[in-house]
Length: 312
Image 1 (cartoon, rainbow, N blue to C red):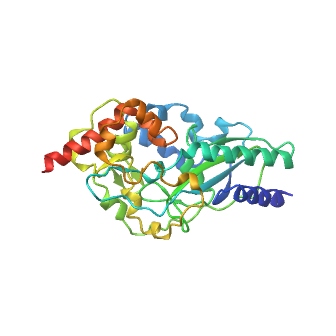
Image 2 (spheres, rainbow, N blue to C red):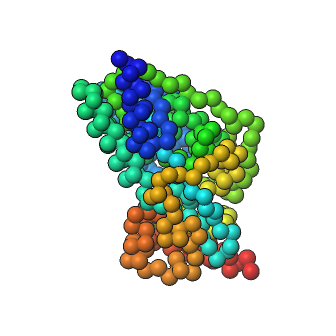
Image 3 (cartoon, one colour):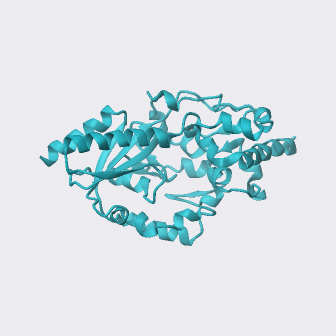
């Protein structure tokens, strides 16, 4: 019965469009305690929300007391386009080229839960996509989706790191997958390539990370120490993923919504600089770029343009 139910849940997840699925027992994960150390060092910067609900972040059963199993899912978002190296173009992280993944994954997870409850009365659960106090990467690793690499992203052997993560926490016991082995080996490509030296093996100081500086650091100027290291990134950064050898195994996604919209793969800096707030909202209303808010996005664009002028 348990094996049949486990297989059915995995089949349903894949049929709904998830590209990978794995299952782990709901418990306190040994590696979850690293979060305390990370926070104590101030590596989270202005992301004070990460200090909230710490008990729930450390143990999923505090988040959902009836939890027995964590169904981890992943969706491939890679599209066969490249960032422009022309200085007149800004760079937006691949994950934000298309529509907001939160809505897409949540819709599919809701449908998965509906189908599970319909076939197995008494089974219930809660779903999460990156916005609740749950450590997505740890659960993806525990459920065998992939391993957490030296750049702290989840790496897979068949999609690289170009994946979005989500979880369905259920009140039913299932058969569980084994965590995946770490295949980073002696490679330090991601660490060596980071222009702000935000990385050390398996650890990241977010306050130095270009993604943090351009997305999470609100209402402050880009620090002088990093203004000349943005390398035209205006929202997020893919450098540590672009250089990862495992991303040679990327596959184009079959999800049309993740394909670039509004020339997000190579936006013109001068056009972005001229955006009004209303046009910004209209252009990025379906994109994760909207998270940065207009004021901070324009700050990023101006910082890149100003640095280019200083280099001339």
